[in-house]
Length: 186
Image 1 (cartoon, rainbow, N blue to C red):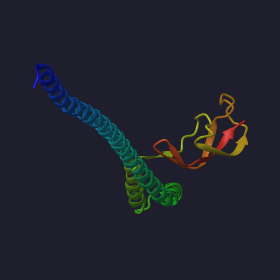
Image 2 (cartoon, rainbow, N blue to C red):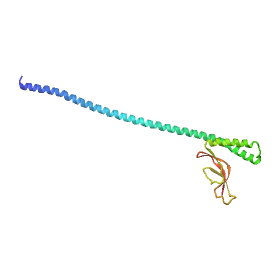
Image 3 (cartoon, helix red, strand yellow):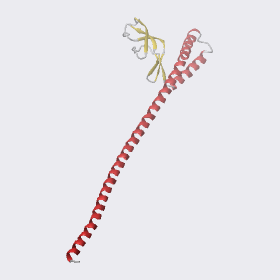
Image 4 (cartoon, rainbow, N blue to C red):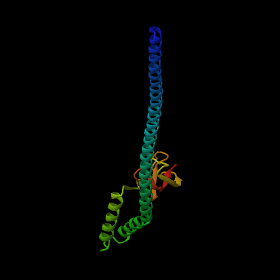
């Protein structure tokens, strides 16, 4: 074999060896690109799952808060309804006490009625209920209900002043359970 043919043979063997190496490099590059795309897809999927998880957690927290508010609201409404049912009893006790003091101040039952009314008032107070029964204060549409408007006997009384409370009203916190029925000055 001649030197030239030996060189050609060596070059061809070298070329054959380089082609698989280049093919392997191309396969590795393609594989790396595919792996990089897969990693990006998985990262996007993780990001989406994290976002979904955070949204669900926020939704759950909002639901807990809403349920707590609804529970408190139901409790408050039930408490208000129960207290409203006892208000006529309180009014009757006040009227009984006034009549007993007026007609029979020496009655042995007077102290008992006073004690019962005192206990009843302390229960109402414990539940945040206050009686609206002041006269001589400015008329307030939020807590008063004008039954009659009349001229005051005293000229120094301003117009729109509560002259007399016909029936007591009640507040529970900031809410008016029952407006006081009043007579207002002209």
